[in-house]
Image (tube, rainbow, N blue to C red):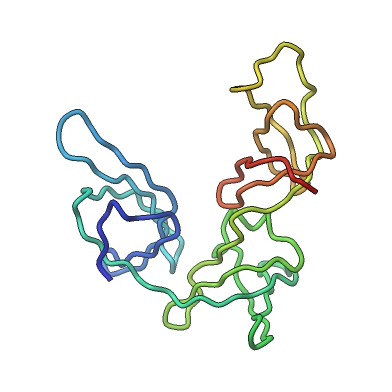
Length: 188
């Protein structure tokens, strides 16, 4: 399926130079002179090589449509993560390289989406957000501006997240697994 480079999103899979690549990062650039372009970071689905590529904003790209199936995370063994297909109840082993950096946000029983192309697993998509607990955070400094200041905090999966000053140890927060960014304080 052909799509315009302006329509690219993180997670899209492209056929580029006769290989399959997933879009990891996107940056839309409009220089003072010349035409706009899309700067992307791509990851090869077979050998996990990374490639920085520029596409003109008017360029047409070949987007690959993947098959999706729902699965539930069960456990991790040495190098693989074990999931259960929610329709067939089959167990599926997925290498940690396919899951990527977001693997630290996997929790028991989490529903995920597995993308496949020609029966090969290409990627794992976690929910848009997940809940974590702050286990370490700097103290609030009186007089600090609330609107624009963030402080570092460590959450229960040992990931550093920048949070607003009012977040304290023991607070549950919502983060995005795709980049580990703070969304909001949990309502639970």
